[in-house]
Length: 142
Image (cartoon, rainbow, N blue to C red; front, side, top):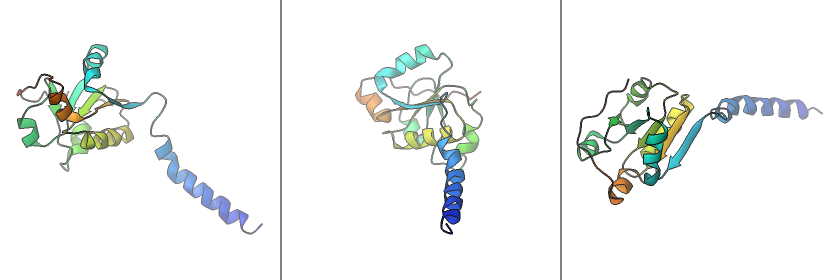
């Protein structure tokens, strides 16, 4: 019986430590991967969809999706910049190949964003798919 109390304390400690992580994604939260072929459908379904490029400045300057905002995931101010986006606004996130955007999506989901879409394959897949590439300035995040 003496071993039971410490064991229960340990279980309670781990349960409370893991609780916020387990509840970070609610039934109302969406954080999923989408293909480049699903992007047009997302835009049609969500007229206020924010397209967010999380690549570096050099990558951005080499071309990007039209009407995209840009916040470099590798910069120290990424979280501060992302905090200017309404957490209930749908956001399509992409990077060069999908790694940084996956991490950005996870970080944003933990921060409370509710509708997140990661473009699988990133900008490389977009270009390889023959999709339109823009050289416009980034849109302002409202």
